[in-house]
Length: 175
Image (cartoon, rainbow, N blue to C red; front, side, top):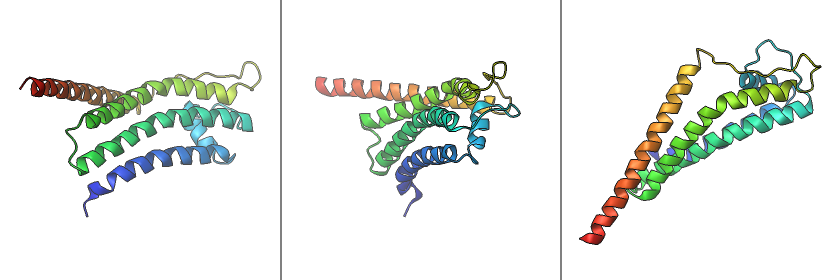
């Protein structure tokens, strides 16, 4: 049995696992510091992990991961259509577009999520200790730019494929 048979389910499961693991980390007071620091970029800044801070942090990061999960669901559909030989259908191109757009949106939301997360974690700090973080990290910026370019490229490819399918359909009506 080929590996590609498992990819539709694996893609969808991966999206669900990202969300479930994220929620699990935020529920635990002991584990919440890991996603809090990762999403906020606040390595040494003091912040609260009270229930309301974890709730806001969990909501922000889960909303961000839902965008990625939607893209991974589209990838699952792409793999399924490849496995069944239906890659030429318009729904294939639409799924490709969904994945591309989800990568673009996910990447563009990174600085927004970081700023919101830093606010969510420090909003109940004393005045003067509240923080908003906007960080361009040299180690992650290239990855973000590549994700953005791949997302744009996939979206453009899907648009071309959709347009080509419409032209082919019109040509069939003429002939």
